[in-house]
Length: 112
Length: 111
Image (cartoon, rainbow over all chains, first blue to last red; front, side, top):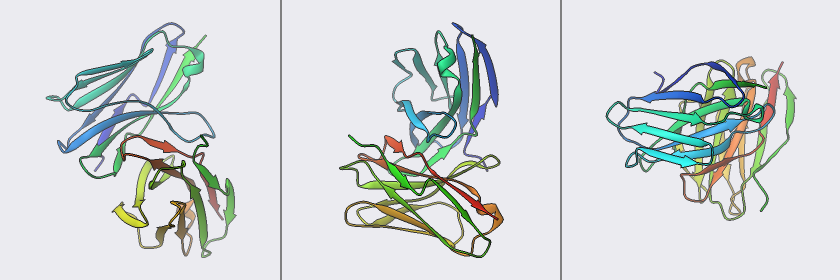
């Protein structure tokens, strides 16, 4: 059973547009929700993360929106750039356990 | 500060053989986690070590094992390799347990 469901599988956005990736979870014991960015041939890099007591977190062009009641969270990339083209993963960690469950990934392609 | 390093970067093994992968965490990080990444299954948690003790374990068979040394370096071992073990094996280190920093991975191909 997949603990974290991510959509869409792939996304094409024009340069300057907004990229939106969504994730949903079932386990209410999850307490930490990071997003990772992965380029081909590289390991995932931590992008931004949020805890369930906050509804939104912004860092530069990247924003996480968190809806605790709906058990959903999303990544918004504002003013998307070709350099943002990568695969993005959401993840969730169970409280007090360093065991992360990852979404299936979204391949983002930003067209120039 | 140096990042997480993994060796070797690429490895080709034959079915039935065993393999050992190495991970050096960021200096000061005591938590090391291992993940398997495949196109079909995505990123799956293998196990986590903290201060030389396995603290968490994923749902992988006993052929997958690991250990951590006193300097926090970690090794992962896979015995009796199967074709399905072909994957990118990622190591991640953490200071607090929340923010994980991944290495570049070891690409294992089993023939």
